[in-house]
Image (cartoon, rainbow, N blue to C red; front, side):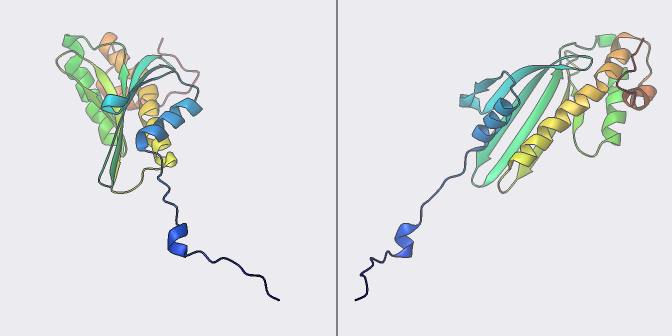
Length: 176
């Protein structure tokens, strides 16, 4: 005699699993790096300080999600501000850097001399962990690569024309 088996309607068995929000995925990413950070959940961003090769930097990671659209914006700001008399030279160097890069850029506030690198990714879909890593790494790599040459222009005698060459120096090279 055959056993009686209950049959469940497939539609009733579907479980709605919501993926983590972008801010939660970024929080997981920062935690996985063992970085100390502050989560500003009310405004959907994070802030943290990191030591780069040639100095300190403050990082802001802004997230946005709505109606299937996502954005991550990573800003890496230098802790040193460019003196007013050197801002035009640093702006020229930043233009040269930005022209040479296809992803990521630098900005300078002419009002106070703050310099920052920026990487932003937008999607009308899901921004996965690989994309979060790409935005974070690009902003940090740009800042790490160009911090010393930009400061050499701001506080030394480096020429804006030499910024790309100076940034390609080896790990062991110094500006002295």
